[in-house]
Length: 456
Ligand code: PXG
Image 1 (tube, rainbow, N blue to C red):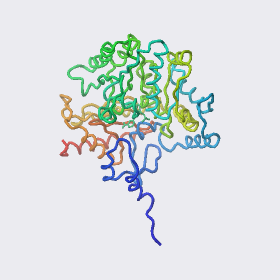
Image 2: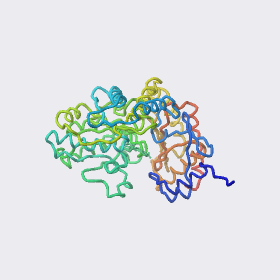
Image 3: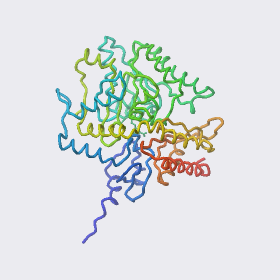
Image 4: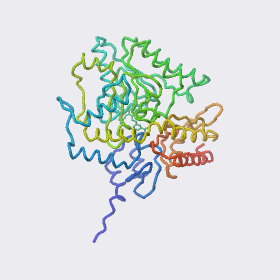
């Protein structure tokens, strides 16, 4: 009898032969071999060799309630048995879609009473992008079409998403950005603040929005979009002066304010939404990720009363939608996810208990010679690697440094993400204090290794 190879030992080869991965150098991946992840529980995930990792990154900023939640599995299975699919076009809805819309709006604040469902954050971006222009046209201001976004922001990978995002390496592929999109600088004080205090720099960065509006003419500008805290860009936490000034500018020039809540939404900052943490009311807010804790793909756009009124009373039909908008199984899983977050009071745990504990742990790393700053809000944090603490100098080639430190942590059983020379954290909300300690200790070891390595 011939022996058949176990499917798992074969998987890396099968994957290399047929699977094109997002944001990966495929030749390099095939040469190095892919990690096959096959099981998870709580904050832990196992690969096919049986190695266990503490996932301090929550999948991809999304597994907020942790892995292995049987009640989410059951809610999805029950919905699949009852009604696996029906659309929300042509005058239909389904119980989970309607109830989920109600639930999200109850959390989103008094001015947010409608939601449009999508399957991802990128689709949510495309949705609000069209909606913003539709809104102004319906008000007889069809010249208001330009959208202002930020360098190093991230809003997805679709054509509108990659265009609005401020990643140059994304623009270079596919002739982006599309017309009508403009980028201003990010509020990254550590890297770009020079001699200004953080508060002065926050105002300066916000006022770039005003200069851009004046340059274009407010009568041409539809909206400004930003993440409350930039995620993929490196957990860039703006100085406290930034958001109030942005809000003032948007109001003064009558342009829509879009808060991209794909990462910050659903508790990551210790509030239900990032805009609640910063105390403002956006006109539109894309959501995804934490809405279902990643158990099934679902996203959407929160639509404020200001925009919904025009959409419903003036526009009539918005010619936009996805086959799976409000998919009943995804909506049922999301409802159960939100029920868990509420029942276990996980958002206040992030704000009052485990968020501050992570902050303390990150701060303890600031005595390390390689660490420039280690800010966090809730369970979203970063450690900035520096070449010189006093002058905040960054290494000339930051990418290999962040990657090497990340790989060192990975080898020691902790998953973190690196954006250039910033190490990023976004753990599940159920992470315990001793697990936070393990993350901090592992990173400290990696930093100690780095300062003696020839990467320096
Ligand atoms: N907005 C924000 C703020 C995001 O972080 C999207 C929109 C797009 O969502 P979808 O569901 O279409 O991916 C995101 C996604 C990374 C990384 O490497 C971050 C994201 C996606 C993939 C990788 O940090 N964020």
